[in-house]
Image 1: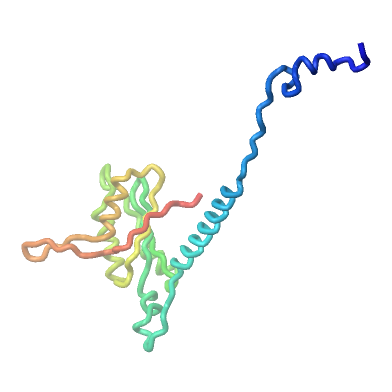
Image 2: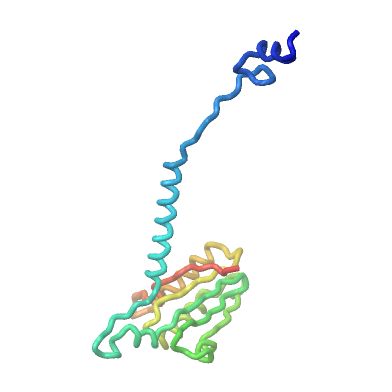
Length: 187
């Protein structure tokens, strides 16, 4: 016996085995360069798209010769209507930068349920009143409460977009607020 001690066991197990006599698993080296290139390009694309979205939302005006034909003059005669679709009815509020808070509060309405359902006819009447006072207005923002059924939301959009008027023997569709935006409450 030599002073090495365990050399006989190492030779029995073999030079390419581990302590348990198993062949070790080959190391895998992943080349993630291509994946990182794709992800970084995707990140830059998303950032650029987000920046373009912000730019598209900003209202821009073009200088004109007379003030009554400008976009700025039109904005003073327009409001954006916010319709909150709740389980117990509608809440209508107007938004506009050229109005005082008292003027905006005067346009606010609470429309309760009509029996077991939402009162879509009254909602249309209230929106018609706002449209008559501010004919340049064209946008309604719908904010549904959590749990409001899809059918109620679709019927609310229809009530805000147009209404029908009887002229003679025929019914005529009149546009109300053609731009309907569905939003959510930020929590």
